[in-house]
Structures are given as C-alpha cells and as structure tokens.
Amino acid sequence: MAENVGFKPNEATFDEGLERIQRVIAELSLDTRRIVTSRDPKVLQARKPLETKAVPSGFRKWQLPIHLDGPSLAFFTIAEPNAVAPEHSHEEGDGIRIITSGSINYNGQELSDGDWMFVPKGERYSFTVGPNGAHMFYCYRCCCAAAG
Image (tube, rainbow, N blue to C red; front, side, top):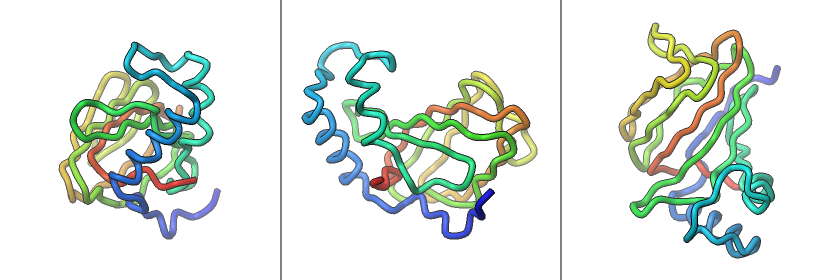
C-alpha cells in the first residue's frame, strides 16, 4: 500500500468544485431539477469525471453531481479495510460524514452504519477504517473536490 505522505484534501476551492459539478451536469444534460438517484444512467456516467484524486492510499472518492440550495459539496467514499486518513482539516467550511456501511475508528470510538460525525471548519482530525472497510457519504462546504 502506498504511503499517505502528501495527503492534501484542500487542493481545490469550493467554487472550483461547484464549477466542476456544473460542467459535468451540462456535458451530460443531467436534469437536477427533478429527483435523481445513484442508479440513474447519467449519474453513473458522471462518476468518472467527478472522481477525486486527492485521497490517501486505500480510498476512492467522487463528488456527487448535485449541490444543495446552500453552498455545499457532497461526496461518497469507499475505503479499504484498515486504511488510514491521516490528520488533516477542511479549511473552507464545516462538514458532516455519515457511515453507510462498515466502520471507522475516530478518537477511540467506533462509528458504524448510521453513525455520523460533524467536522467543524479547520478542525484537525484523522481516522482509521475498520477491518471490513467502510462506505461513507459526506457533505462539506470546503475544497475537497480536487480535479482528477
């Protein structure tokens, strides 16, 4: 497994992440004025161009082709068993991380299916993925949308 040296989650600004979403939505003619799901064909096509490269070893992450009325960016991450997210912070805003399956260990606590964590702007943190891996959804007002 590659080392996590140089992990920099803040390689793009919030505005760059929003522009990226808008560009992919336009390129795919994805109508986000209606309900869309993760199984819609155009949403599936959006996954590759919205993939994020600024992740530590053992993680895959992509931006969702949506944004909420207020400024926000949403992501889904699949993490391999025992992967480590080294200490980092998100400098442009607060975030919420929801564990949808598997688990992570944060500050001596195991967070699993349905658990969540709120991460205030600028707060440094790290976590380790549990032995069965983890799937996580999170929404940030930050610059976690580094272009691929």
